[in-house]
Image (tube, rainbow, N blue to C red):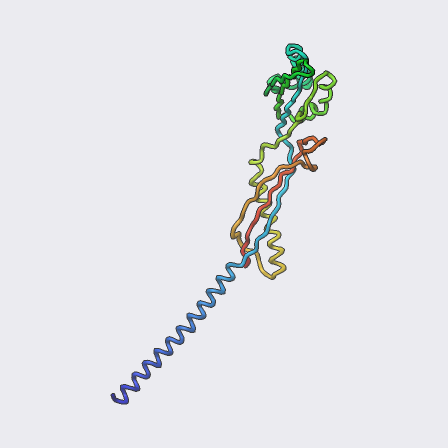
Length: 239
């Protein structure tokens, strides 16, 4: 081979090697910059937001369980009919419509005590109303039934329900998300970054409890005053 040919070939190789080196450098830079940008884009913080709202129940239900006992079935039935009339009159005096009170069940139990037959009739009536004020008035005067001779059994109590949760859900979820963003902004401020958009979010369960504490247990009655609560979990991007 001539010296000119060898020299030309070497120059080609050198140029190719130079281009390859430059390409590797640029590629490495772009790869590193891409990974850095991907890592930066993946930066996020997960926080929880809380929203609470006080509401008043719009439905009251009262299952009234009562009983009568006698040594013969007819007498027990007479007593239970008298109690039913007393209960009906009680609610009528309070201004309830006749159809607000409905029978929900009855049973008869018979046994012998020292050879003497005993009959017990148990009956249940259910009050259902959207008039919360009247419902509270009825509960306040429930011992009037006892004075009229009605034997109220365990399980007789007023229950208050808030049925309009769907109407306030959107506003409460928005409030919980806003609360979560405040927490994210505080975290971002402490770490020297900014809060971006939402990466992902999970809505928690809505809970409805007594506003002033436990609504159940011995000696504790339900209340129409409730507290609705929801917690959302939100993952925010950090810029």
